[in-house]
Each structure stands twice: as structure tokens, then as C-alpha cells.
Length: 136
Image 1: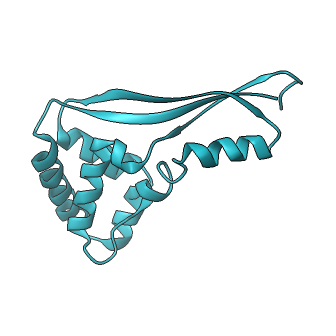
Image 2 (image 1 turned 180 degrees about the horizontal axis):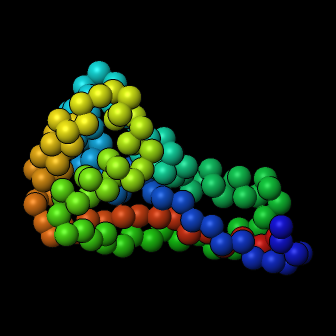
């Protein structure tokens, strides 16, 4: 709840294609599961990535959008193996992989694909978000 005139700061991730780490991860998942790969990253963190839709939703909720910025920073990780293990064990993708089975083989496939795309590490890659400032 905001007081009249209060400010609402909000951000959402950019499209999946603007996050090289997650593009590489998704490619690894698609290689590991060619028939039914997990689509969490496409639908959840990157599924609300159209700034026009976000601005329209804010306006429909009664906010006046004062500023919208695209922000791209470099993500950093010690290795693609660290990235893969973090994504495969520390996000909802874990459940999707466990449901499909053979976690060690999936992990190896994802690490191999991510390493092919990003190098072994240390790795850096762009990550884009949209930042909104709106008034109540």
C-alpha cells in the first residue's frame, strides 16, 4: 500500500535472450530433454519482459509511470559448472529435473553445453532488466 503521491520502484528481467547464462542453461536443458525440456526460465523470470505490457499494467493499477530504464550489467561466475549447479539445485528447475530423472547425467549435459557456449570460467555475461518508477 502506498500513500497518495508515494513512489513504486519495480523491476523485471529482460527477455531470456538478454541473459547469456540462462540462454546457455536453457540450451543445456533442451539438449538433456529434447522432448520436454523445463521452461521455467522462459515463463517465470523472463515471462514478464515486455516493458510496454508492464507499463500498461502499472497504469491499469492506477500508477503514473514516471520513468522506465533498460539496465544491462555483467553477471560473473567462477565457472560454468558453478552456474549450472546453482541453477539446477537452487531454482525451481530442480523439481522439473528430478521429475524427469537422471540428475547426474542432466548435470553433466548442462555443464558441457554451458561450457561450450560460455567457456569454462571465470565467465561474464550480460543480464538485462527493466526498471520502473511510478507514482501512486
